[in-house]
Length: 265
Image (cartoon, rainbow, N blue to C red; front, side, top):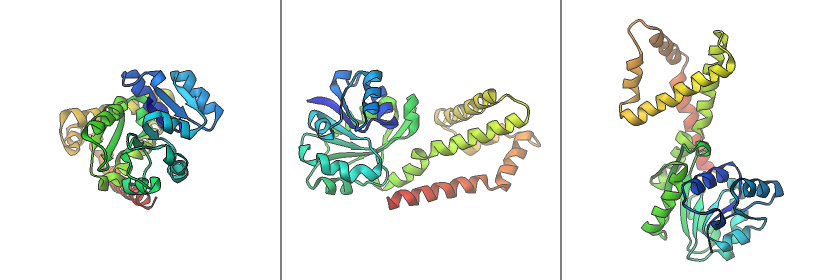
């Protein structure tokens, strides 16, 4: 039996494979990926040297830990296809928003070890943030093994399942909000005369450095903001305009909408 199997070999699966292999948590010949398209199979086989198959049942049958890395709308069909291959020794890891532990177990129609996760796309550069919760059948040892896998492409943190929809909005979808911010910052810099490539670099580095300050200093974001705002200075005037234009409220309302959509999936 192989150590890891992926059903679906898209961007998130590829990011996970990269972190797992780079950190030595599995060897290429211990990983199998299932993809219905020849192009998808060829891409991951050439990039990582893993085993590939067009048959989901083969991946399910041969892998000890099976990661369901397909879009949420395909979960029911995929589980229906593979459920007879799953035994009580398998560990299933899901990455789909809105799909609860109970719902996944119900689709299998029997007790199954399930770990529900919500990663995000910065996993593609080893800086992902993944939320994790498990059902009652998963042992602590299995959870620790899963956390090592999920931590190989960023950070992983255990949370109560009731917070998963909030996670979708605060980290799962939030890279898109940050990309809009970086794009807007760069547009403004370009309007001030800066070349676009340079503007993206300045904006992205400022965002990355600011995030690092929050994580490493332990200071409240408001305190860090105040450190940049000199009396009667340029920054406080920019902050004033952001508040006047509803920047903070727009972020909050967007995230609450995202959370509600996640709950409805």
